[in-house]
Amino acid sequence: MPQTAASGRPLTKEDFIVGWICALDVELRAALAVLDEVLPEPPFHRLRGDKNVYKYGRIKNHYVVIACLPAGRPGAESASVVATYLKLTFPNVIERGFGLLVGVGGGAPNLQRGHDIRLGDIVVSRPNNSRSAVVQYDFGKAMQGGGFLEQGNSRLQPPPRILLSTIEKIQSGNPAPFRNNLRDNAHHLGERDHIFQYPQSPDQLFEATCLHNASSQIGTCARCDLTKRVLRPQRRPDHLEIHYGTIASGNQVMKDGVKRDLISAQTGALCFEMEAPGLLLMDAFPCLVIRGISNYADGHKNDNWQAYAALLKPLLVPQTNLHQVVRLALWSLLGKNFEVHIFEKDTILSSSLSLNGSSLPPQEEYNIRVSDKMEETCR
Image 1 (cartoon, rainbow, N blue to C red):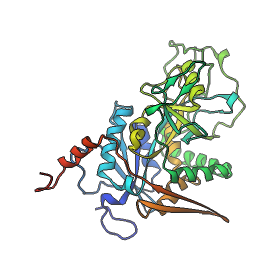
Image 2: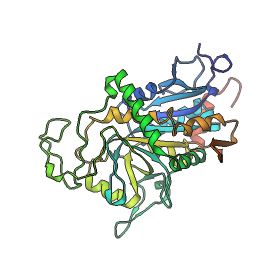
Image 3: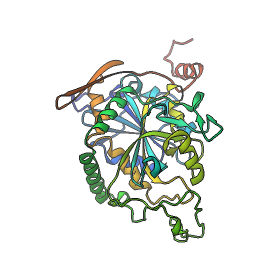
């Protein structure tokens, strides 16, 4: 039976305070690769009706539960169901902790706006000025002149404040040691498992209007018009950048360069994905969204960079600076309302957090809880 690292007592579901959701099997495999320890399934009771397949692990003395969306069922609806049962089976993820939505996404580079996003880069959801951390781009209003008005459900819940405060401190620091350590760890894990090795496929960004030649060999752009490639500054192949800003989410896979650029200009989005609204609507599952860039959300999209991009995102959690987002927050999780103090040299950053919420309407969540009632109760 799995036991806690600190006291040696048997683990309970209340010990798990980080909920980690991924959409693809390769993302689950990457998440497991970066844990300090993968744990066997504890023998505790889960909520009746919970069909999620969970994996359990540890980062230092902190316990993480990971759930993957059912195979072949990506998107917000599937993510909402997974998140709902995860938080009901593991209530301390909401009561004392937070969630992570970690997966691959399609980048929206714009050199004119200073967004030199490359394959293998990472995008972290963060609100910026009037922009939301995550916007559901097919739920707002497309305005005259090309503007986009976030409205109602298009403006999704921001990440928990404790995570935002830590991200702000990370951004103000020196990124070079972080990037180097991230690269070195990715190389090490790539040697252990070849699926995560740095891809041999070239990183090519085409003009938005350049259509993919479908007669090309699968997974390549061999017959695409190479004169339409976007010229970008030289960058070392294993160099990566971390971008902070808005992530656009919708109900369809984005594979249109023109539409990508239009929505990015309207919303300020740095990348595209599909699952976040299922977690963030109605403050259902307060979480930080992290996306590794595996394509450019255009017709040239393929899966050659998927595994490598999938690996880099979870490496953010246990490694160097961004692991503070999880680890330093976890160290201070003493209750529903708490303070965290992040010490670095002579500076102290303080923040507070109160988390709660549900992804189901009150009556539906009540029905789920009543269906799991104890005998002689809830008559």
